[in-house]
Length: 332
Image 1 (cartoon, helix red, strand yellow):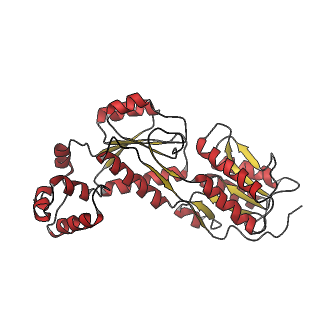
Image 2 (cartoon, rainbow, N blue to C red):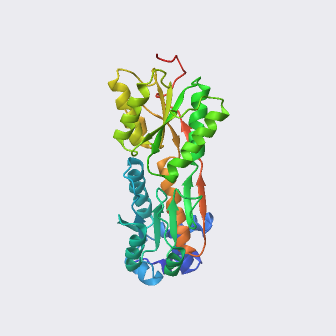
Image 3 (tube, rainbow, N blue to C red):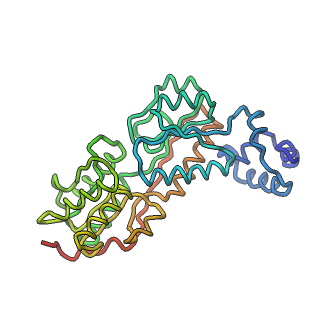
């Protein structure tokens, strides 16, 4: 059986360098990685996770604290992230407990790193987490977490949506995506919406942002029905996520109206399934595959450098599809 030691001897590098290269660690130069991967392939190397754990004193497991809200986007992200980590020889352990309880559980299992989500104020005590020597990475909390973070520039995503609609001639634009309970990730989007609307000289009223109980399909449906029942209804709407978007589309259809003829829709969440909705959706955000890859690579970096803090900002894009068009006229 070919071992990492065999590869190291042929490559003329240390055992540690081979181990990091095979896990795609950012601490190894790309040229060296390619050389080591080529040798490993030629030698028919198959990783032995159990043996690697005994040598490296790593469990080969990543602990993930399940987010506080059930959303299709986060479920899709976790599925893709699990695939990414499996490619590097890691397994994932999920906890639906609050973050303090989850960390205690992950401590017992001796996970190599912990991923938490910034959709709630669930930050662990810095003293407790640092004493564990287990790196913590947050997704979606770059501006208010003391830990390493991977985050999307959500504000910029909403600005892209407003600019797109304004350039199409829409002057009455609404935003559906403000839950009654405080959600820091949604708050960033709402603030950006308000700023960009003002920047373009568009009308901003108390009715421009629709508040809901949550961020589910039903919430989007109810908000859209209320919006479309107004005497002067918006000609365009920006949705805070895919679940809300599905509800918006249902409401518009039930009223005998159509997207984009009667109302243009731009949705946050750059997911593959957005193209397959009943109306292919114009979206803003970072592609799911890019987010998962960034999280996985940052986790690997932190495992190799547990005392470091790393923040990664991902820039969104606008993907144009059939759900937006030039403004025709307000429907009285």
